[in-house]
Image (cartoon, rainbow, N blue to C red; front, side, top):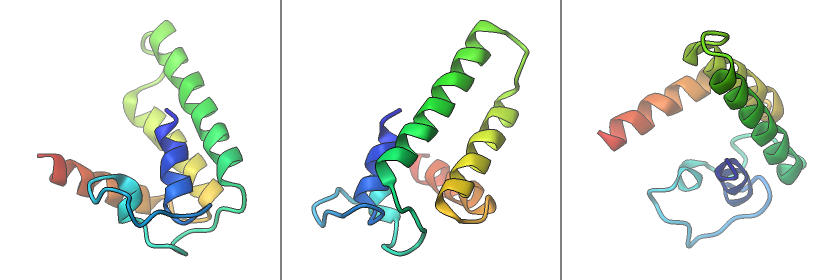
Length: 100
């Protein structure tokens, strides 16, 4: 889950690296594309949310659908980064296409 932290930190939200591999999600983010005053805290909050929801889904079968989980996480990330929620759906489609 700390991959979230790596994306935020390497993407220009808290610094950057020109040596980031092109295949990584961080390499696809343009500096200034989103606002993130405290990338480390943001990464921890999103990681905690993912861990907690993942635990609930694992322990309580049928409590939460995959789509609900993704919607909650996307909404939290969009709020944290001050971007439209739809930008995560577009990014997920691009990643799925690139992986295929």
